[in-house]
Amino acid sequence: MSHIPNPQLTLKMIPNSQAGWDVIGAFALNFNGFEYWGSFEACGEKAETAQKIYNNSAELPASLTLLRTCLFFEQRRWRHYGYAPDEPAMRYIRALVAAIAEHVRQGQRE
Image (cartoon, rainbow, N blue to C red; front, side):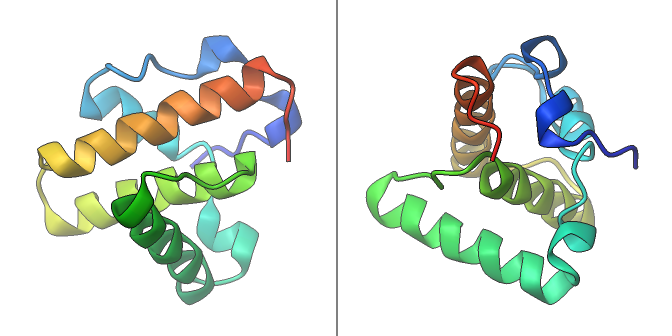
């Protein structure tokens, strides 16, 4: 996995939120949530909490780092399952990608 730090992330690097899972999944690996948070457990806790909030209120994390953490964790989750995300998961994943793009567009890099 090649890591792209938040300050180096550009809009051109971010796939369209309607891109296929293969494109989005590959992009997700440009951030290593396990490394950033120090463990699988810590990364998973952040991602699971964010997903629960999204499922209850459609709210996404306010920081670029947390958005990328969630997208990374979704990639790892679905790779572990061995198949592509279902439609509800893709709605969440697409929302994450759109929010990542919006953060970069606005210059919000944390």
